[in-house]
Length: 508
Image (cartoon, rainbow, N blue to C red; front, side, top):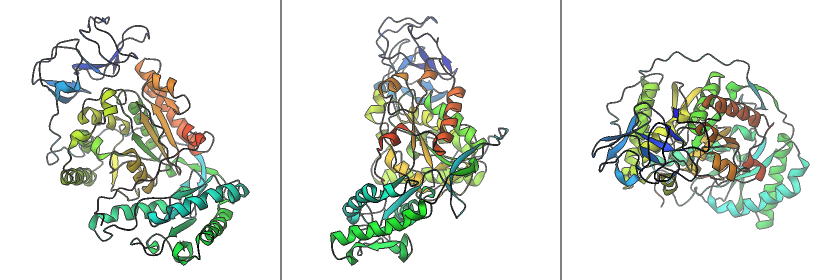
């Protein structure tokens, strides 16, 4: 990556690959017409921060290249020094899924990082947690109001008696009834709820609150001793009282848990990005990718996701599959999602969002090329279908939609302990049962959101830090958060988003 100069008060651009014919503007506020770079490039019009400038004349129908890959074709001639706007770029065809190279990259494995640990909670089934939480699962959305009322009461009146328990969390969702419970794709939301109910941060203590007439019968989520049916209770006060009683039994057990030293091989880290911009692929995501490689070398499980944001870069991933089977699984998940979008009469132009475009991302191809960088360089050792649990170690692809909330929910179902989240535009997104570490792509976002951003990767763009330096900083911060030594800003504020199930099956 070529960062053109390091001085803040003179023009800066970033050219990623030697073959690129565009670069992005680094300077906050953009650069005006007539701005000259020391290399001789001169802007012939204003170019906003994060947006692309033509480094050479690009003739009509010629490729526009960023990351060394074609992100589109020029709809008209684009002179040197001009703003390469979204309206000037024709979206190219996606990679042909039937003609991809699989498991062809034979890089020498990076040396292992031995001796790294975290302070976590060992579970009786051999897994480990990084938080000590009582999770209360719902079998149907109908019970949400009662459960929320009870949880507030538990937090106020009961939880203070159990200081070793971090929180009580209601696992609410919009599923359970009025749905085609027997439809083939109903397996996705059902297994998601099943797996979240036994998340390792819950210490094996399960409590399910149901209504009594729902299609998703609570027996599918746990045994009878862990289930409370509201229709069997004589009124609201009795419902709340019984939820509190059953919760306290479990809080007593959770309160006995203590942190102990656990090898990093038992840690599961999710990777995601949201509110992305053109800096995501050159600052935050490369630093996250470097940290991901460190985690894999230390024995951890790392998962990256977002099908629609890797689809146009899938040719760069299938060659990293450890074997033919993993490569075919990657392709199968892409094909399933292509069919899912086609059925909904949607296409890939629905991504990126307006905010992504304002941040300099012209189309989904450019977004995908920047998104996959957070996966690092490790071989891809497995693929997790939506709602399933991670069973392999190393770097995994968890097939999820790109939606922050749906992706986060599915990564939780896969067993994620904490999430690393890159953002350029900014988002307060967080999960109640797993910390979300925010990594900013720009210095200006860190300056504006000092009390929401945990790690700043914007220094990479200005030459104040390297990808490796920020990657190591993030690696150590992950272990500190997992150990309870440090807390993310979002956890300090106690904010979180709702669980959002992925339900491609019909609603009746």
